[in-house]
Length: 189
Length: 122
Image (cartoon, rainbow over the protein chains, first blue to last red):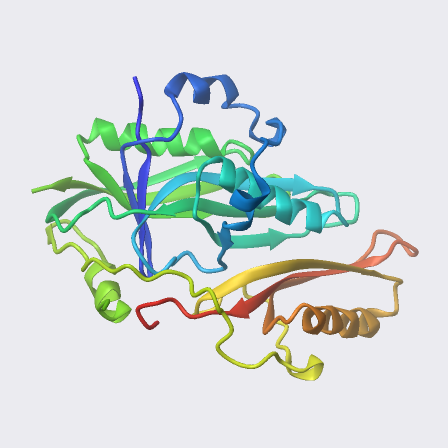
């Protein structure tokens, strides 16, 4: 069954997550444990160049979250990391990556982390009124971004939510701190 | 035309249980011509430890300057020089890491950003 990830990023608020995804559940299941090791997808250079990399989480309009990207590279390979971030976002058909952060490893030998949330411009609320039915807070080991999103979605479904709004991703501290994804489950009236 | 983003902000911040008013539909997009102020001079480029600014910014480069121990100021100057060279208005998330032992290089890193305008007038 095709699942839907639908996180909405709206101005000055870290987003809403609905329940729809660009990937099949089985596809996620195959790769849940190897976010760091997925081969770099082939995407047309023109499409890659259209991905905006935004420092803030606010893209300026409602957005749908397509995935969380965390690129790990060796120190000194930051240009490659930046390009990989764009390519992976483009492969998700993202318009932008928001909340882009770079974390250097503690020492020269530790990996650097370049992370952000891939989104596309899309209004999933569509003017409907809704009720917030609960807060969601998922933590997962670094490198398990997809699992964290799935868990957020699963918890929202358990609450019979229609959408998760205010989705916010926090990269873990240091090289192995747990990542965190939060949001608010809502039901449309 | 699009409504001000401020109204959208007010509509969404601080959600609690209860009826929520959906945000007004806005369609601002990153401007194609992003610069809202002239490129900074090398000396005026702020190097900030914070990872995010309270204004729209586009990431244009990442820097990781390696320097010999004892040359931290040179690294700082190099970071500013590179930021100016790519037309950055600021460098965010600046981190300094001392090398291990006595002879490993120091690392000074950060994200170079340009200020942009989002249509809708943030």
